[in-house]
Length: 91
Figure 1 (tube, rainbow, N blue to C red):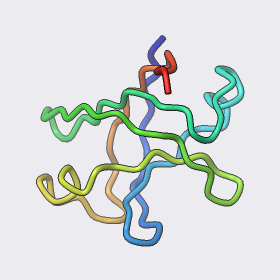
Figure 2: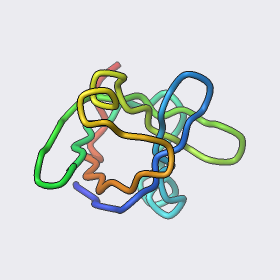
Figure 3: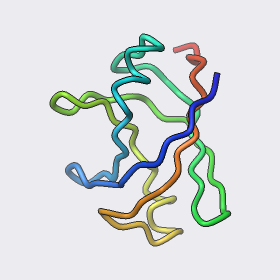
């Protein structure tokens, strides 16, 4: 199952992350450590990658690979569209 949402990028330590909406976390019983396939739409340029969900405070986040951040000039506060494949990957 897929879900698409708009999100703002933020910096946590040396990583850039997107916070997942809590409704998606609850509805699909996702938890820290689950792997997801993530497709980021950057002005008609798409980049797909696998990411592990991490819990930061009370939020669940997806880390954006540094190569994607650098290649597309993403910065904290940038808005992106995130398309998440919600079928869990085998660990």
